[in-house]
Length: 327
Image 1: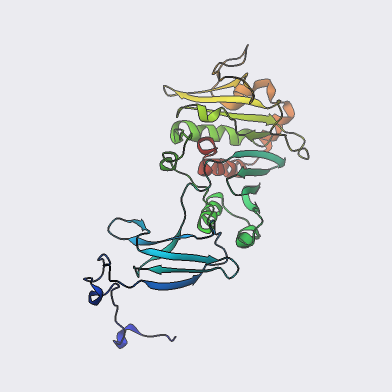
Image 2: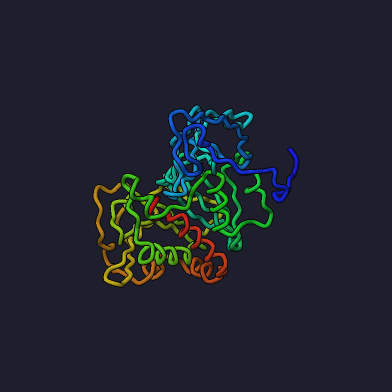
């Protein structure tokens, strides 16, 4: 192998399959007589392989999507990380993975562990993700696997969006969209603008003194309503038990342009859902107002003392991972 200068004129680009094998040049479909090419490629160390025999595809410029037709004999040696396959297409090739591999999330929780210091725990189908948010900067703590060594050991941390994008490039996609919900059973994408973004804003504001978690009732609601659980957490050394009954269930909806938040009498083991507020209470414009005296004076002080940068990073993590729609 040696460098060359295109102006030297002795290098020419050849189409594959070539016309001599039954084709007509670039962009054509291979014929039955086209011999496949055997290709071997070492997967980069930062790529998380999710299958014994990964799917490989080629980019179709006409359809603007990845295509697996013409790919065969795919094998992957985990120890050497060598991927070998036969291809009828010599063009842009890639290891493919379904976008919904990690959706829906099994469970999620945000919990405060110090001033401007929060842990985000997200359990997917294959991995438990743990992201530390400290003074607005994200650090990946788990999964502790070799492929994510560089992501975990970035000393100055990450912006939430950049960290999640890098995780996606590595093979762990936590950036769902509405289209993903269409192909997943029992997942209804909430209205991102009317419900999710407003709810995430409210939740990020109380996160300095409250743990936040999923509720099993959430997926039973439509696009305009969400259900989460919150629990005041002032002892940062005592992580809350997700199975405990002392969580507060919060309902949230967007009704005719009006945001409504309320405290629900529901627990996770209740027999049926109710959208009625707990006796003696009513709906409010924000989650914090709905909590009322359930947020202690000390809890309010922690909320007021939290930095805008920190709560903004929490809000961005919630919005990007869309925990209320996909968890």
